Length: 186
Image 1 (cartoon, rainbow, N blue to C red):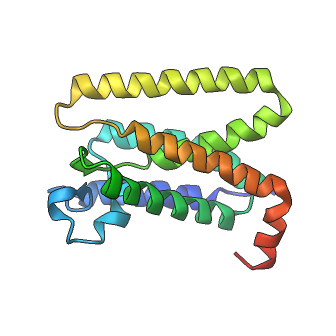
Image 2 (cartoon, rainbow, N blue to C red):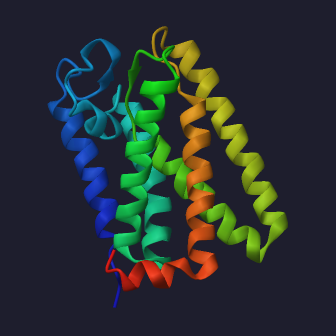
C-alpha cells in the first residue's frame, strides 16, 4: 500500500491557495503592518511570485515526501510548526534590515538539514556532496534574487537557522527522544 505524503500535499496546497488569494500581499510578513499578528503565521505560506511558489513547492514535494515516508506525519507537523514560528520570530526580533518576508523555503532548509544528517550517518561522502550542492543552491538563490528583485532579499540567516533546526530534529530522533515524543502522543 502506497502511503501518500498528506501533510506535504496540504502544505503545498495551502501555499498555492494563499498565493492566489494574496492580492496586495496581505499575508506576507511586513514590518510596517506588524500589528496584524496573523502575518507571523501566514508569511511562511505566502510567496512573492509564481516562480518563487513553484520552486519552493517542488523542493517541498521531494523533501516532504521523503520525510513523511521515513517518519510519522505528526513529526513533520511539529517540525513545520517549530520552523515557521522560530524563523519569523528570529526575523522580527533580530533582523530589522528585512522589511518583508514570504516563503516556505525555511522548512525546505530544515528538511535538507534533517536529510543530510540521516544520509551523513550512512554515507559521509554523499553528505559532503549534498552539502556542497546546498551551499551552491543557496548562493544561486541569493545572487539571482538580488539581480531580479531590488527590494526582496532572501534571509540567509533564516535558512541557516532552519537548517540547524533540521539537524537538531535528526539528533532529537537519534538520541531516542523520538520514542518519548511518541509516548506523549505528539
